[in-house]
Length: 153
Image (tube, rainbow, N blue to C red; front, side):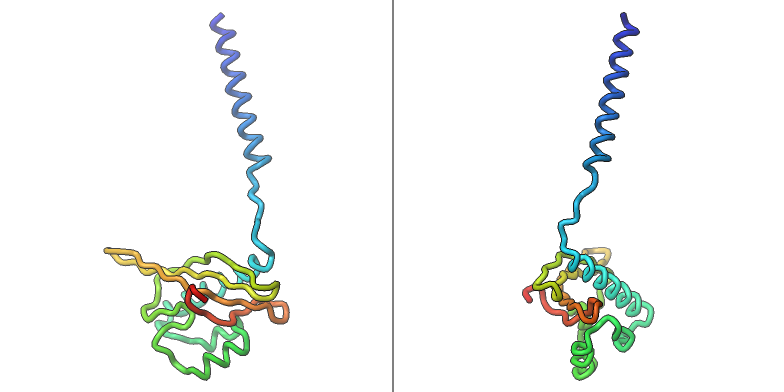
């Protein structure tokens, strides 16, 4: 009698594990609800900001000319005309952040998206955050940075 109870419990447990595994495999894929334009622009934003943060921490200063491949010609010309700034124009801050995170993407049109960039400063006492919006446009098949502004842009 006890052997048959144990067998039934083992079969029930096996069935539950099988069902749970099946549900995870069958339903575990989360669909991507983001537009292909946002996905492509987000990837370029991640590439640019990774490069920018790496260049700023390695060199200790701005070498904007090396970032031209990531910028629209209009935005590059605008930055060149403004000359050196008191703030980092890509993070809108005087003190360079320690890290960043790519946030929400809003599509204005199939060739124009705004991507939220969250920047963070960390110290022993606290962590601070700021947000900017990076505007990306599709030019000649490539997503390029067209400007950076405040989160109310």
